[in-house]
Length: 298
Image 1 (cartoon, rainbow, N blue to C red):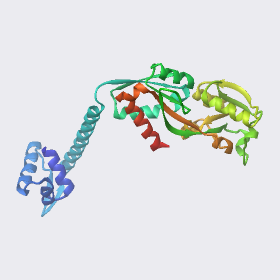
Image 2 (spheres, rainbow, N blue to C red):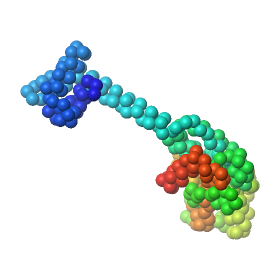
Image 3 (cartoon, one colour):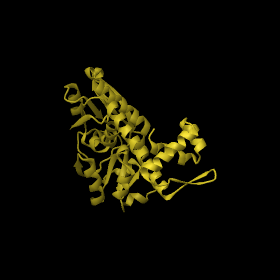
Image 4 (cartoon, rainbow, N blue to C red):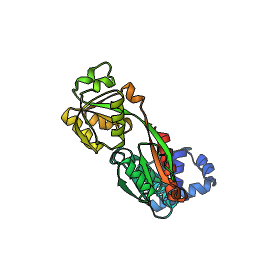
């Protein structure tokens, strides 16, 4: 063990006797190590007052350096451990909607790359039916869709359940209403996802079920664009609860209102992969970690 680390243990134990037991060396041998370090540095590290040891100013500087070196060594070993655990370089191609790419994937991919930093991840975007086709045609290894897919030769693993929320800009007259129901959305000016996207299909089903005719002012694919335009245009929207992070709501001065009818209409976001991918170790590592990640965070 290096002299600096031995010295740090003595400081932390505040006793040569205790430190010698912890280090499993004799007290005279420990004293010689401290004296050797003092000789090498040309300073006294302790002032000895009877049986008590007190750090000198030089000793405090030395101890601070020893702790910093200990932390750097620990960080270095962790980095090597992560590198060894990551194995060889690999690549994954993931298919998802633009909205999923913006709202769901960043945190998941960050979590995965912390454990497997040598993985190169490529992303392709498309609507749900397009992502399913990508997986079937082997254009992507994995698809993430806001649906549960039952298709031959595809595996579908649920990740989390989600429902829509009514999102209102600051100053909207509906903010102060004690209660809001689906009927209140009739003729309400709104910005919605483009037709054909999975959540727009869900919205249209709800509108049909409750005979609602909203005043659709814009139809947009991008979740981030909808968020900005709702705030700018002072117009309402419907967005998935899972996409609405607290900082996003706060920074855009938005307000969420839960409607009972929306909460009762849930959709499951799933991860899908083809039969042949079930035998691919890299694919299954990502699938397993995705399931564990959302089990922990939802």
